[in-house]
Image 1: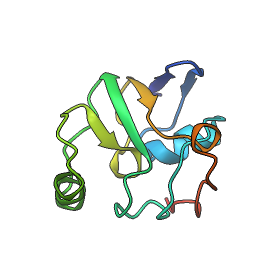
Image 2: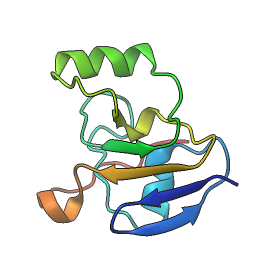
Image 3: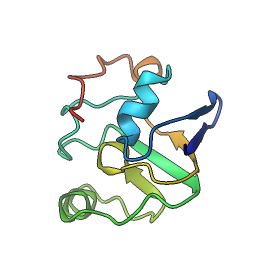
Image 4: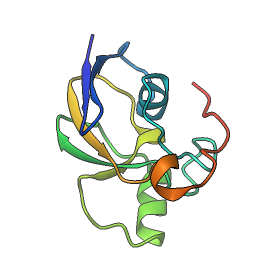
Length: 107
């Protein structure tokens, strides 16, 4: 099973194919996902420090462009399916923002 190392939070294993946003939330990371994992808000952004997050969907690419996100290693965790080991750093959390996480993304 792939291992996800989250800066400041620890390392955990997840089932291959799991959405990264759900893997983070289910393992105690208070990641934001204000739009419910639909690639509309960018609050679930993570910095991918190591590993391959896979190909970027057209929806993610368009949203990143519209929001001015240009760093290749900043991705939306709701659009990543885990297929291998990764090291990530959440960029927006409930604790840091004071916002409600948002509706739980679907599988």
